[in-house]
Length: 160
Image (cartoon, rainbow, N blue to C red; front, side):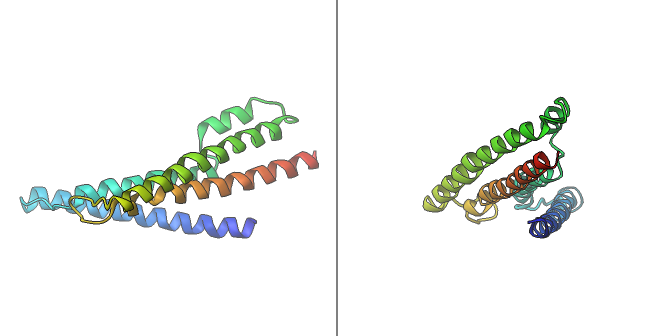
């Protein structure tokens, strides 16, 4: 599982770097066309919003994997070493359930609804369902990382 996790995380990291580069280029182009050319680009603001959605949600998955979420750290550091694995299992179990019900189930419902209603973004003219596909993707990543942390917590329990 560690090899697969490293592979997924490397891809996630590269996608996030690409998205960050894209948003920098997009916003720079917006500034250039607005202030230098005096004719603002019509799609850059909408694209920046869509990129921000993807960066924020995929970044949350990456933050979960790297344990950069403050709340998770605070809870696990306040308990004794003997009970730490129990708290970690509970925390990542809750994260798993949240990721399953909100981003995966809710996100798939949103994606399905926007494709069914043929909702199109006004400036770029793309189906909004593609933008919302990041929700179930993020949920699946969070579920995968949570399962990995739960397995590690069980292994640490048996080591002590």
